[in-house]
Length: 179
Image (cartoon, rainbow, N blue to C red; front, side, top):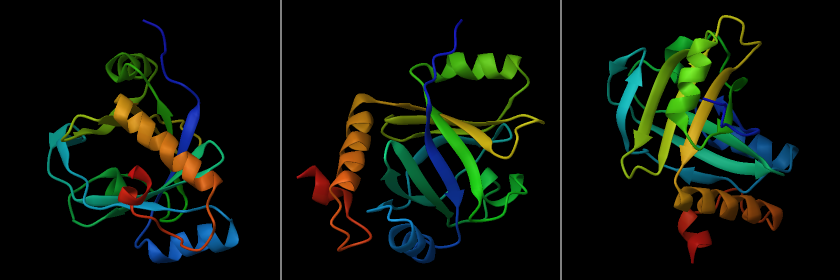
């Protein structure tokens, strides 16, 4: 049972709104455009081993090969986005590594002292994710994500859009890059 996850591919930030952080990233840090995915449809969502329903949106962009994820939760459902961490909003919340076998890697990390504190899957089965934490995490939570082929392709399309971004708009609808 070997580790299958790859390099860090994402930095995630929990925010109260998208407008101000996107303005900061696009205007001051020259990172964009952002793709906003509203009200993600998540099944089998669990927080601290309790099943629940959550409503959140994400805004995604790339700086080189690193994805920047802004997360805005719209409900009061307990989650790592609104209650678990003492990390301040807007500060680095988690790093993400892709894996081709999320269940294998969760078992390995749990055997090394990590706890699976939040997990779920998109309703279409395209993305499985788990957030893991350890007492000595040195500042951020670890997310593992397993993406279906079509989601890997979409990620590459977003990455390529950031390379050719004309800076005219800070956000782009996903549908615009899929045509």
